[in-house]
Image (cartoon, rainbow, N blue to C red; front, side):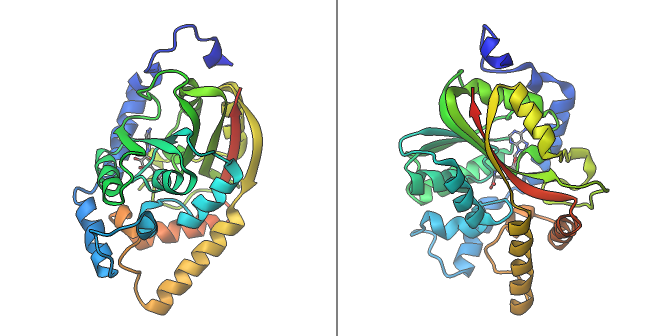
Length: 297
Ligand SMILES: C[S@@+](CC[C@H](N)C(=O)[O-])C[C@H]1O[C@@H](n2cnc3c(N)ncnc32)[C@H](O)[C@@H]1O
């Protein structure tokens, strides 16, 4: 209960100030940024016969859910959590904001997303305006290790495929706990270690092992408990992930090329290599996406 005992809850933690964290964060943001993202997405929408002036949140789903299983994984994850209409949620590492728009449009929540990558925040904002959700979602550039919010701001939080870029899980979870109300849910869907062996790179979250911090569910559990969270439930999504990628590969082989609109737009470079490494690590049992649902004590 480290956080709850902390007498003076500031809005920033010492973790952000650590030079090692700052240097990693710069590399991570550079890894994701590409400078022309919104235009690339609009071009791909046009190539997919969508009118950028008449978009729905669902039209964006092939590109704005940057995690294993895309929109289906978010729907499955949401079913495990039970966030209620009217809740104010925090999306930790929101990317270009697809899951935030999903929880706003489909669950009636208000969502604030934070992400390290400035270009993702700008794109998330632009896409929310285009689909008419700007009043219910907002996005801010910030580190998950130094959230710019007062203690107890949020009714719930979630994080999808972000922890792999953050070494200091204890600081991360302490910071999320700080901004949550007691009794609220924190749901995680991250890629975790499921067996020993050297990971193959590049991966979509890191070109090399230097900015990749994939750890076991057991390590998540102990960091979460130390930060003041209690376990509610968890689910291994390895089988779901393997089935998902087998289908992606089969569809691409049949079509002869990937569809214009897809998360390859976010991966920027080395897309076939990143996918091949991910699938190889997954099929070898080295990694698996896992859902962990916790409650703030
Ligand atoms: C694989 S993407 C997932 C994005 C989004 N959660 C989704 O599922 O579509 C990982 C995201 O985590 C963000 N990220 C990594 N480290 C972060 C940190 N320390 N603080 C905030 N965001 C971070 C990256 O900028 C990137 O947008």
